[in-house]
Amino acid sequence: MKIATFNINNVNRRLPNLLRWLRSAKPDVVALQELKSTDSDFPAAAIEKAGYGAVWRGQKTWNGVAILARNAEPVLTRTALPGGPGDNEARYIEAAVNGIIVTSLYLPNGNPQPGPKFDYKLDWFKRLRSHAAKFIKQDIPVVLAGDYNVAPTELDIYPTRSWDRDALIQPKSRAAFKTLTAQGWTDAIRTLHPSSQMFTFWDYKRNRWPRDAGLRLDHLLLSPVLAPRLMKAGVDRKIRGEEGASDHAPAWIVLK
Image (cartoon, rainbow, N blue to C red; front, side, top):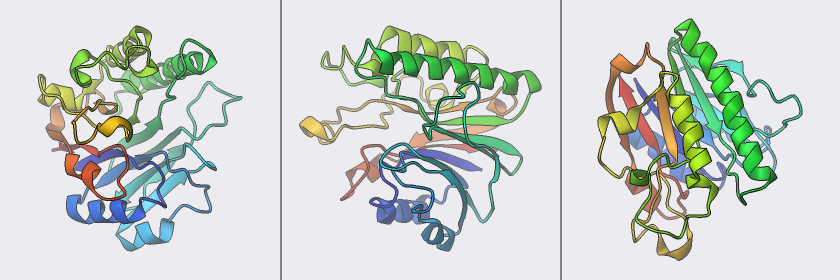
């Protein structure tokens, strides 16, 4: 079972890129982020024609998350992260596919920091930890997939000082990610590639893709019951180099 997470950065603009990748990579489940599409504008027909059922939560101009399943219909279980009654941003969706709960989460960027946007990021992390703890307690097979907007360690960013003030690598951001994984979640890519720079994001600015000046922001975390089934994990880097590409590349895992 192949499960991927892909920040598509505008699903309608990148639809040709997405469909090409679906045809070549053949993931069984895909978590998409940054749809930048309303619910009614989500390209459900084109995705269905490609052989994928879908559930989604859109938002005009920004955010938006979806889960796709190959030759199946994802069973929607949640369209928002609990604990934020006033939070209307489309950043979380959850569905059951073939006996596994898969999330698509788009954690707040947090910039500029310090400030209210960074506080929102840390609060969102806190809510995610609270929700994730219930999965652990109930021993449910779960993949927490998505764009976490955190490069967890120095290995997850190219050698530079230019991001030192950025919310993506702040000690509090990294500590929040570490506290989440400490519940018992397995960082699939880092587990199978303990010393490799497996970047998933290259900013459009400053020639960062040609320079391979990337960060690892997109993660697939496995609950304890799923972790022993992990066989492979990787990043489809070449997708980032295509014409009209998202600034992210898909990260993926294969489970027994």
